Length: 246
Figure (cartoon, rainbow, N blue to C red):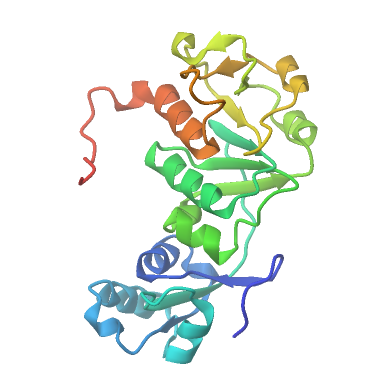
């Protein structure tokens, strides 16, 4: 089995938890699961066994494959799967223009899922979401999402123009704390290094996130987290939620 290269027809998870998420959400795409001989010590292994048995997916014990593909020594399972295409739902969207950092992408996917967002638009050029580094950083959240690439924002806009657009910009016209969301909407964020171009001021209601003068900008994944928290507040009010263990 070879290391993943951008555009390959197959990719793989790195770790027990992402592999379980793959088996739960996309079993139809899984080709096989490769495990380390010491995986029986891991409490997630019975879950993998049950899911593989249910979906008739073979399990191979092969330490060399694990050691070859995993950059870390604590990887006990790899899920090999066929890459796939998704379709966007006419719900609230997150739009990322030219995201290039694999760790950021995985973190943003996990953050999206945590706040109940499942539709991700990616404007090319951009990172490959099926790179194992992205999958691992997402902790398997990628398998819950509908992620679709577009060659340009205009291509996306032509397909989903009947919605509210909120581009996040340093020169945004409205403080995020003053925004009352109109659904369905698209939250638009730019590249890690240069944000959104001024032409996005022509789309919808531009927004800025206020912060102190001690920094020049927020990290992209942090900005997205703040945006998702603000725009999803209504859906969590009065609900029982899972509390993070600290």
